[in-house]
Length: 608
Image (cartoon, rainbow, N blue to C red):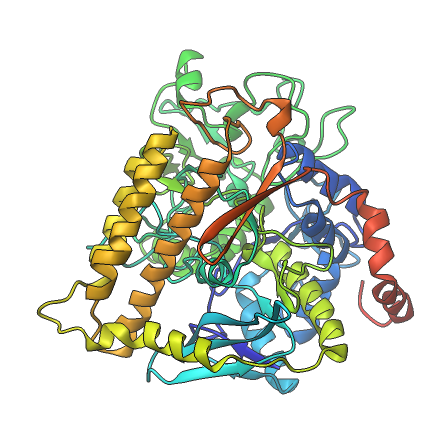
């Protein structure tokens, strides 16, 4: 087995710096919900433009993967009793829970320990890890239309690799830098690294892979474009900071209310469902809201000002119980994404004390920049690869996981689907014969990869210029409101980039060559988005999709997945019902009896 990683696996990717909670651990011993309840809630919350298969895998197997990571050396329990007696801590298991203290299905974790532990286990198992090696293309047998391997390049030396494989798993994150790119300040970004730009999507598209929901993009809330800074460094009460006490400029507390609009009098009440409400979803998103104003978790500034509260607003942790204050500022802020060093460590070194000081809230407080309507982003549950119950793509032998999947979620989702896809790929590989690799395809990929090295620097164009041009084109022709004329003009413009700019791209070393490959993949992703946007002939609220020439919102005939792929440059589409995955528990158990029996045999062998 070979792992190909563009960065250094121990700290690479979106989870490399850490994360503070593990969602949907529905089978942990304290859980008050079933995998079916939470997976179905996700599907309903996303108005069925959702990945029922992957969400159910996350909910059914997510806690098992958390136990695996603990066995590898990751930290998932309060083993030092730092929070002994806290309301969110289970004293028997020492697990700590977030958001919904009644149902206990989201676990607070020390996510910065996970990637090093995982890499250590991979080495113990003898997995060949190729760090600093980017995957660039898939090898597909045209005769059988099945994956037979992949190609790649070392980003330090430029060495070309051919990987022969019976089965391949794509886990290369979601696209970024499509609408947004800062060519001058390409440094720090938010959750997902700047280098995670959807190369797996581009590889899949070139190979004929199917995608869905690629027309979905939201006005940017986060950015992997280098123009912002890590979130959760300003006062807020979202997600990592959920249930933080918020006050206005006078120190007047802004009340929380429950689902039914009833004011909550204590901090503890913020973490429990309303009477008759089964559960919260994540980060304070409330199941079945029945009122137009949900309290400070929305941080609707205009609404709060109307109600008499005075700007600016602040998060005031000093008004919270000591354990709640420490778990937000210290554990959660210390572990989430890129917050450990730039936020927690830097603020602490500069004297911030949550017992005495407040942090001002800007915008919603958890965002780190303001964005225009045309500045879009793949956020929330975006588009991605279409797949079946095995997480197999439409190409035999190629599977996908994590942010490569359509309607993807967070770290627990990625880990659960990654293990599952690997399990299914392994089963496939046991019976598959090695496929024939086309020398013609290999030579074409080598020529494509190395072409920028042969363009004179003085006459060439750098990768930053093309990335900026793509993002501007997408803002202008595929922004907040779309129409056929704009979308087609956008495709024509991108085609002109391919013809006029791509042959002039220049790189003088392997690092610049890697950056150039990234932007070529961004160009491909932009084309996928435009084709998907042309294919949907109506507007859609759940997809954040508006067409001025088809303004009708979510007509029943168009409530469907539009699945697209290309064959020899011709874009093909097909329609798939939103509920194509069937009854979740039944369909899962049909296909996973071996895993279910394995777990039953393991009972008692792992700490609960």
